[in-house]
Amino acid sequence: MKKIKLIWDFRGADAHKTAEHHEIHLKDYVALEKTNLNITGYQQLTEMHSIAFMVVSENEMITVRDALKPHRGELYNNQS
Image 1 (tube, rainbow, N blue to C red):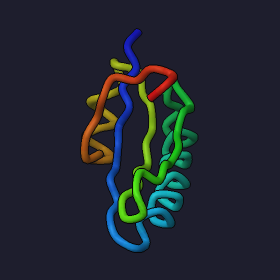
Image 2 (cartoon, helix red, strand yellow):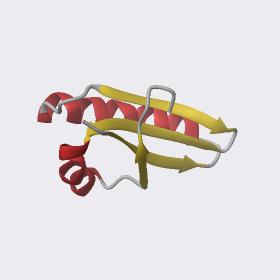
Image 3 (cartoon, rainbow, N blue to C red):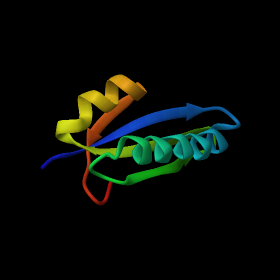
Image 4 (cartoon, rainbow, N blue to C red):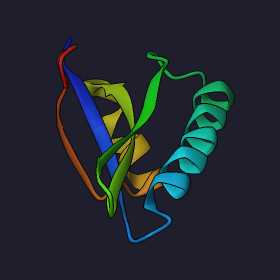
């Protein structure tokens, strides 16, 4: 089963706090919808760019993508 990392980008002075807060909503979605995987997180890429992400199984990707509108996605491996 392929895993897809769905990514939301946040930019600006408050990007890190926004990404951290967005992960709370992603965790709520995982719990509410009982998705196959329970992998979420946030990461500061630069001082002005942070991301929030969740990992979904390939068969759930379209449903989650349409519901949550991530900015982008990529194949997930444990080092992503």
